[in-house]
Length: 412
Image 1: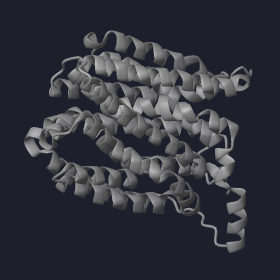
Image 2: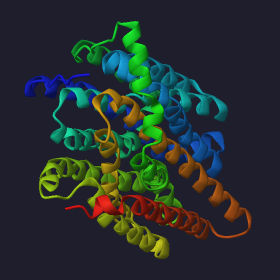
Image 3: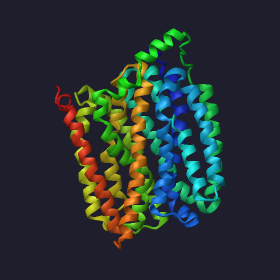
Image 4: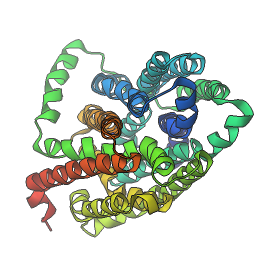
């Protein structure tokens, strides 16, 4: 499939249409961290319940990634993102009307399914509509918009809660999602659809998903995607909030304010990262080199947080999440490792890994916290223990990546 490079002005309009969808996706992803005190009180949730509820979004999201790759490659972002967002609207409405934990969980799964194309759709389109040298920038700036969504899920939501209630907030999100569907359908470029059945069969054979999953480079990034990067989002979208409340002693409002500043800093970090990344690439700093050199910083920062648990503040989490920004290079690196014909499948395959990781880490931390506290230990020690297990797994995932990419890392 040949590239169809869009003009700068056209690309800007298309970018903003899809960015609005991803904004809603990340807002819905992270909103449970802010709503956790309210949901715990209203539905009597345990830590494991909370982890599963937040993880339900990622379960639904991950479940759609493999079929999504085929759908995006064949039908393009315009149709697929629009259709999937209809499911998101349904999920938002179910969550708004939920009266028990099971309904909340079903709604979160539906929302995860519905917004599962909001990043992979445009990234697949960008492989067609943008030059290769701008792929990392397009990815970083989409993540920047995602940070705006996460930002909006913190203090703004906390301030609206006493005025409107969480159910009315979800009603408003349903309206915004419906508007986004219309916007994408009107603005997104058409996608070249293969009509020849024989050609389709040949291309399906050529573009087999096994090519991606058997690729050594792709395999080397699986543990980092599941635990390091997946864990980053698990913390950013859920566990940073409860840590600030249960370990640092923040009030819910103060915790939401802390989460606001975490995502505010990330917004500008992604903006700057997207700007400088093409320049770093010209200087020879490839994605592999940057991940190899900078990932150990994430371990040191997290270790400091674990050791000084009670004295940590939201600033410590800002530093941790900033140190993890290098991990976001993995996804576009995977996209560039394959042809444009395989871009959708490659990107969604890695996204599947990533969101399985978020689901696993969110739930795992909640289970470990409940397990440790049930043995009579303090809530603070439970958090320290859970995050220590997470840290150890991340270190081994990083070493696995180094083992398979040592030559690439040391290439001139």
